[in-house]
Image (cartoon, rainbow, N blue to C red):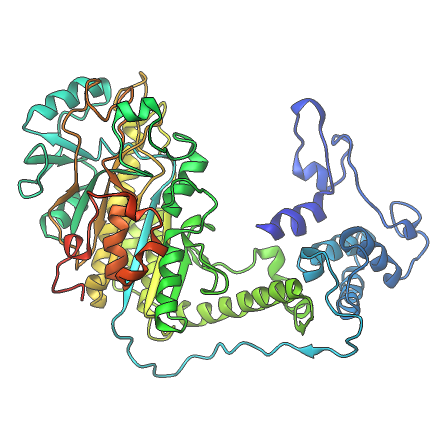
Length: 566
């Protein structure tokens, strides 16, 4: 993303401005059409014009770019690389412009661009080349034992989860139909038995689109968590209105609630992610790096751990290993060379090590999982969705666990479009169908690999949605209903506490069916963390607010079959 923004877009389009909220077409900007006003296109002074009419040498041009972008701090070895880049691009149509764009693109990948001091101490006269990371894999790797994986399914936009889990055959259903009005689901619900779950109703129904998750629930491989959400302390609506207890920051705001849902630290959106902290705890316990994190969809907060404890998450895509974007991929050898020297700047060294490791880790992943085939490949393909593709990549990595020598893996997958202010019904039906199909293919593949009992899938969203309709859809709320699934899950249950009154009189309803959560996210993550291997004495570092709650906190024995989580 950083390279796309500066190394690609800035180099291609220049710095542009458009007054009064207008916009310009990128194609016009790149071809320098006059329709783009106020273009601020920097040219090296030594050129003497819009092109290099003075035939200034590359060394002088690089010095001027260096002064502009890195304050004249470019190391001589990297300066030599830049001169080669300039010369190599200086051909064809508009050669001077091509050379300058190529150089600026490369500057975005230099360690000097990302730090404010010199790469090398002036007293150091020699440089050492960084050791090449070992990306070889054993030809016949030993099987990994005691493998565990968590797949975090994020529903971006705030899923209307009170359409996913609906009370049936009791007084709450009458409340549900009355409160939800035109968005109430009155037919087609898939019935589930909650008689052993201490809920206000013995019968609930799943959204008609969740037929496969319905089967997992009935087979004992899935459970639901009722009315879960970010909390600092438990409260009711009177305490909320009085402000007598601390509340999560920026309630109902997508960006902040996404952060704190994924940090599970509701008073600090800048904290690391809960999966990152779990990994840190596991690595600290083992005294070695046994934890790997993968995102198949961007760079989410939930995977952020301590840099000195766990390595950064690997970022893939639904189509496979996410290499540099195509434009940067042509520069990969040069980008690697720009970070090949060991330097004295701790900041420059940190950047260069991270860059080098990222390049070689990408090559390793491509080598190990690039040609993996799955028994359920056709299932994922026939699903035909980005989410199914993401789950397919998760399955490929899990199948490659021996070659990757993985003992603990966590994965992030996501699906967006849940912000249904104006189109709740059909959009939700489509999105839940995509989730249901993807989970079905994934569960079948995990069973085929013999590791379904070693994997837990957990769903999450930044908040729930209002129980009441706005006439077209629903708006931002708080608590919501989610599921966990896996072969070791103690399924067929609804954990937590479904609200026993969802009318305006209910003690959790703060208006328009915005329900205060009865279960904090800590309640779910405690049991999952324990199943994953976090020791009880370390749980406070993983879940800083855990001691604030006395109820709806679940151990591994609550969420998982006791014979399968040890």
